[in-house]
Structure formats: structure tokens, C-alpha cells
Image (cartoon, rainbow, N blue to C red; front, top):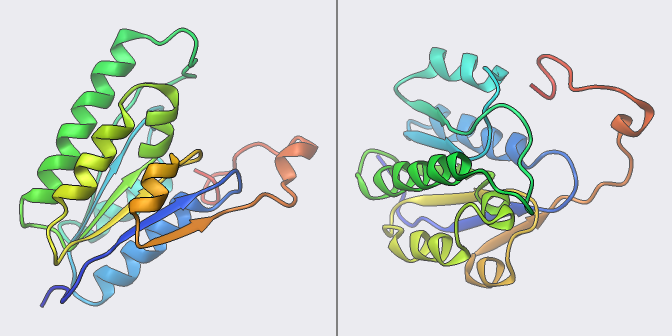
Length: 176
């Protein structure tokens, strides 16, 4: 089946829902017989609900989680975080170019660049490599203006109100 034409989408902004929107697109694609791969940058720290769902939908939906548990600090990067992000970048390249997937989602890749774990030129390089029949989705806060300019569709999630401000922590099945 496959796509006649793939495009590049960016989900960015300080609001909640970027990964969720990408997963929704992936779920829709699987429903239509497309194969989906998500590579998660800087998302260590255990299993999220999407990993459990992907196990049920494998091999149509596969998720590769990368990153360590804990916080990343832009002003004092750990070489291990950089190494892991470079490995995730290679996984992304393989997924994009391997002809196995119709939709490739690079979750939190924009954040990985903002933190300095990878370079924006790495993202632009992946965008340039995208095969014509593959849809590419890039998520994460702080998408660089060059990434935004090179994309076909850009959605900015804008936080208006968030229950986190009232002390509500991430909830199982909703945020994780």
C-alpha cells in the first residue's frame, strides 16, 4: 500500500500534546495498513504507556526508547547523554532510509538539539534524506527556525493552562 507522497511535520511549542499527537497519527496510520517507527530521544526512565501499546501492535508500530533516567542540563552536558543521542540519530537514519516504514516519528528530536546533544544540521540532514513516500514527524519544544522553515506542516502547541501548576504529577495512562 504505502503513501503516494510523504511530507514533513513538526509538532513543537511549550504546550502538552506533541508526543500524543504524533502517536495519534501513528495509530491512524497503523489502522490503514501503514508501518510506523518512533525513535524517542531523551526519553529514558522506564516504560511509558505507548510502549505497552506498541508491543500489542508490533510489527506495524515499533518504538525505540533512548535516553537515561533523570534530567539533562544544557550548561553541563554529560558525555553519555551525547553518546546516546548520537545512537538515536543513527537509529533514526536507519528507520528513515531502510524502506521498512511509511511513517517515521522522531520524538523529542527538537529538544535533543536544543539541549546540544545533537546539532540542528543533523535534523536538517535527516529531513533532506527523507524518501518521497515516507512521512516524517519531528516533535519537541524549541524547534529551530530552520527546521520550521524546511517542514511542510508545523503545529505549535501553546500552553494556556496546565494542572501541573497546581501540583498534579504525571499520571499513569495519561502522561506516562
